[in-house]
Structures are given as structure tokens and as C-alpha cells.
Length: 338
Ligand SMILES: NC(=O)c1ccc[n+]([C@@H]2O[C@H](COP(=O)([O-])OP(=O)(O)OC[C@H]3O[C@@H](n4cnc5c(N)ncnc54)[C@H](OP(=O)(O)O)[C@@H]3O)[C@@H](O)[C@H]2O)c1
Image 1 (cartoon, rainbow, N blue to C red):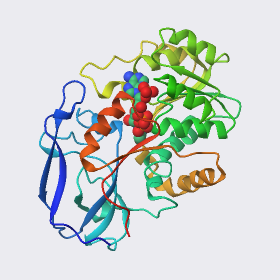
Image 2: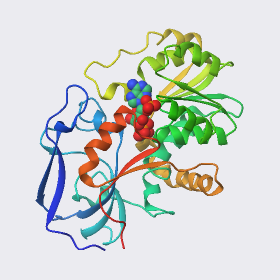
Image 3: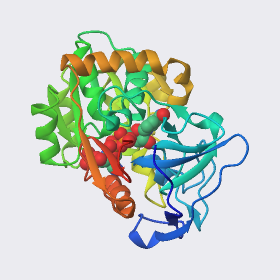
Image 4: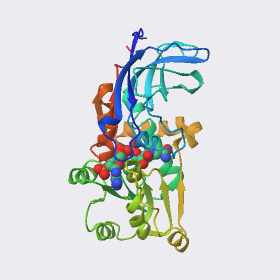
């Protein structure tokens, strides 16, 4: 267990962005380390999860409160309990603690984590990322062996796990990403059968060539024009797992929804289903065990993209939205517990 410092380094959302996120939207500050009250715990942040959703929460159209100007930037973190009325000091917990070195949270909302292997895996393949990939693919999309699975943002955190799970389940997998290096990564490191650039001027033709038998499952991390393209390739009774809309988070004028909805959905009898990881909270241990087994067998490899230091969190998020990450982006704020 660590002894708390007296000062708490924090990153604030200085000003809500109206267009693309930039460094001037954030400000670093220092506050006293807070005291936990009844039913609360004081936690020391170890690793921050950098998620596209961090940007979406600034917009005010999501499943949680909008982040206000001048507030500590919101974000999930792995942290160590230091003091308070909850799990014992030294316990590792997943918290909605924000971008700061120390956070006080309700003890009931501190989810105890039992690390399997390196702690960072609890944010990537065995945490938010891997669980989202698992439930979105296995429970929502339900692919069958031999089917074609198309994945957007395929070289990112969630996508890189989806590609490997779909391949492990015996599917033909086509990944979409935004650079030549990522397309090579999809084919050579993740084992995708084909890879397509969403920046290609011939995207429509490229998708057709990459999916000659159509698409049975589209795992949609992106929304926007890519969803329109995917809809044209879907097979009858195809499933679209709507995981996120990263194409819309970092702009003032998101693209309208695809014109093919509902016409194509009706004609092809598609199932489009959105989901949130929290919907499956009671089943996280079961999924974590399956993912851990796949990691142990080598069927699923772990790709993480770690920045060092709380002050680099703004750059980590801005870069993520621009697509400069491969695998799960994490910021290390402090050392693992002793
Ligand atoms: N439903 C849930 O419970 C849940 C939970 C976690 C995450 N999510 C969602 O899952 C999605 C992926 O999240 P993640 O954490 O795994 O992030 P990520 O994929 O690691 O990072 C985002 C990636 O999106 C791609 N991208 C950005 N703008 C794009 C655009 N306009 N068109 C196409 N691709 C674009 C970039 O890759 P390229 O270089 O390839 O463009 C970037 O690397 C997000 O939509 C997120 O909100 C949902």
C-alpha cells in the first residue's frame, strides 16, 4: 500500500471543444489530496484507460453526464485503494476516477480487480477493451464458423481483439483501418484474411473485392460513411453490432445516419443491435476467464500502446482520435502496487 502524497496532480477540461480536440482544451493543476467520507474510498491512480468515449462525454449526448468546463477530465482507471470505508488498502480497483493522481469514489462503485498476469492487461484484453470485443462479437453478433466478419477501427483496442476472436471462432475476417502500416498489422500480426483502408478513394470496390461472399457480421466501431458502405455488402440475415461511433465524436457536424436504414435492413432482414459493456456486468468474470484462456493459448495476442505520465493524457487522447494508436491506449500515472 502507498502512503498518500499531500498534493494531487489533475488534468482539467479547461474548455469544451466545439471542433477537433486540441491541447488548449485541457489544463494541468494541483489540488490537495481529498479525504474520503463515509462509504467512500481514496484511491491512487495507476493506469488510465484512454477511450474515444472520453471525447464523446464532452458532447453531452451519451449515457452519462456531460463533462463540464473546469472539471477534472473524466476517465476510467485502475487504481490502488489507499484509505477509506471499503476494500482494504492495497486492493486494486477499477474506478471512474478521472485524470488525476488521487480520487475519492463511492466504495460501492470501486470494482475489485484480481489481476491475471500483468496489471495493464486488466485495462486491455482482460478489461474494458477485451470484454467489449467479446460481448459485442460473441453475444450480440453471434458469428458462425465460416461466416465473413467485417471489423472497423480494426487495428485499435477493441477492433484488434475482435479480429482475433473472430478468426479464433473460425470466421473469415476483414479489417478496416486508416494507414498502410495498420493494414499490414491486420494481415501480418492479427491474421486478418484481408484489410481495407477507409481512406481509399475506391473504398466501395475495395470492400467488394475483400468480401466476395458478402458480409455476415459487421462489428461497427465507427458509424458514419463506413456504416453506409458496410450496409451495401451485408448478406441476408446479417448482424451489425453497433459498438461505437468514433467518426462522430471529434467534430461539430457528425454525418447523418445512413440512408439505407431502414430500407436495406428490411430487405435483407438485418439485425442491428447497439450494446454497452455495462449491460453484461454480471457476466464479466465468465468472459474474462475465456479471454485469459485464449491469451494463454496464444490465440489472442495483446497489443497495448502506453504513454508515460499523467501530463501526457491529453496528447494520448488527441492522438487516439486521429488514429495514431495500435491496440489499447493506456496512460501510466503511477507504479503498480508494491
Ligand atoms: N459499447 C461499448 O460499451 C463500448 C466500450 C468501449 C468502446 N466502445 C467504442 O468502441 C469503439 C472503439 O474504441 P476503442 O477504445 O477500441 O478505440 P480505438 O479503436 O483504439 O481507437 C479509435 C480508432 O478509431 C479510428 N478512427 C477514428 N476516426 C475514424 C473515422 N472517421 N473513420 C474510421 N476510423 C476512425 C482510428 O483508427 P484508424 O487509424 O484505423 O482510422 C483510431 O485508432 C469506439 O467507437 C468506442 O466508443 C464501445
